[in-house]
Length: 268
Image 1: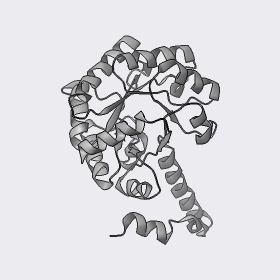
Image 2 (image 1 turned 90 degrees about the vertical axis):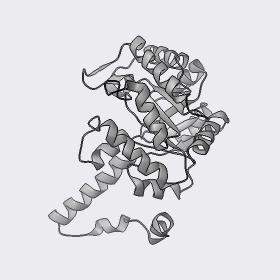
Image 3 (image 1 turned 180 degrees about the horizontal axis):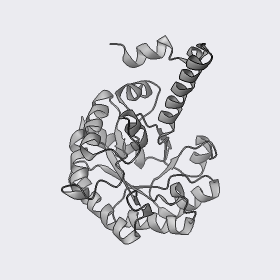
Image 4 (image 1 turned 135 degrees about the horizontal axis):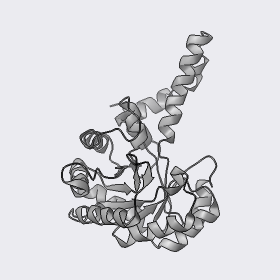
């Protein structure tokens, strides 16, 4: 099914209609989301790391590839992969990472320009070179993996929209099929990116940002949730545990998964 998933994922980006691509963090959350009307799913580096008892950025390439295999077979939906920097320092570098993700069943993947080791955004020329390496590996598949180039400025406190736009254009020119600048929060910022880049744009859904219908009017093609679904689920767990250990009550159970949703997602 991998080739068909890649084909369907590309078609979603080729049409003029926005689609929402939420981010599960394990096979169970993927199966649940697949029953709720979405057309594609994406991994979350943060949510997956938490499921392993790690912080975001601490997952190994081998762990990510195994995770992709698990999620890609959990549902019939195309799966995009939050592959961080695509592990440029691992054996075979970026290209090998993309090949492994494609072989594991990914329909698409992303590559970002934030370096957690240095705590800085990578130089744009180096970042674009890595996008080109990822694009070459993605296009070795038939049909190709869909590659997303990410500019991480706004997620890490660099509030420079001109630089963000320049980076996204550089990543587009290096071969990215879609571009993404997480943490854009205003309609004006998002509209400027959409108008400048000329390829499909992904936007992170945020409580302080425009709604999905508003994003559609701005010309956004794809909306994802990043680690927010996972953070919300873990937050509910922490709140429930505090209620039980503190007050000794279990009112938290009022928000539990319904039997109908449970059967739809996990029933055989």
